[in-house]
Length: 233
Ligand SMILES: Nc1ncnc2c1ncn2[C@@H]1O[C@H](COP(=O)(O)OP(=O)(O)OP(=O)(O)O)[C@@H](O)[C@H]1O
Ligand SMILES: [Mg+2]
Image (cartoon, rainbow, N blue to C red; front, top):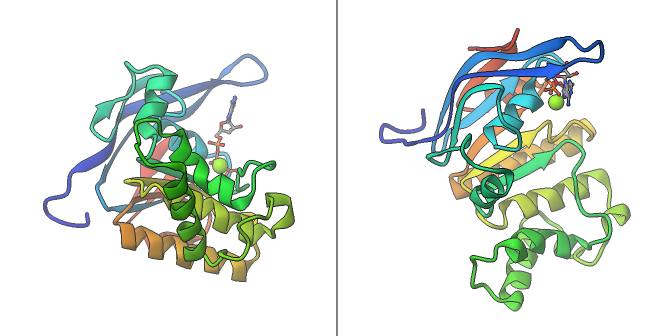
């Protein structure tokens, strides 16, 4: 826990996730799992490949719903909401970074970073300001000179920097990161992690980080291991 007055930002109560397997049997991926994450806390989730880490992240972020149990995000229960309502809740408040960058191939680095701000129709920020904020976010990740490049013209590490700039540009309360260094060499991965933690600390962002790397997990306030559908400390 980061401080004594922390409020709970993400809460999973008794969540179970079943998925259909190829032979029409059901797979139990998550089994009556509980998790509570406070504002500003950094949480690492480790576990073997296939243990359900990405599935769990998707449920905590409301990208998917559990088979049973309840998830609350930013104080709101997700189960009564439809997909659009959950997306609206995330907008501007939740950022994502994935292993495979997930940038829009046909947009420049700058346009990719502008996107979350442009999508926010509740915002009154004009295009000029959006462009300026996106530029600053790219400068922050050391890509001030690469704003017009398309993702295909950038290295993997540079693409992940763009993804970080895009994730942080709206100063989200929560960042979900799924193996953010999984496709990068060690040195580049360490640069990305240094940036991620520095931006997280600067913005007091709540961080949920899925990783295979125990050293990386240890840098978070709390570490859990996903095993047999449950979280172990
Ligand atoms: N859409 C789906 N339909 C059926 N099974 C799925 C689906 N998505 C994931 N699974 C299965 O659920 C289990 C958990 O997958 P998940 O991707 O959450 O694991 P993971 O811990 O993230 O693994 P990795 O470390 O390899 O990324 C796996 O056995 C996987 O095959
Ligand atoms: Mg995964």
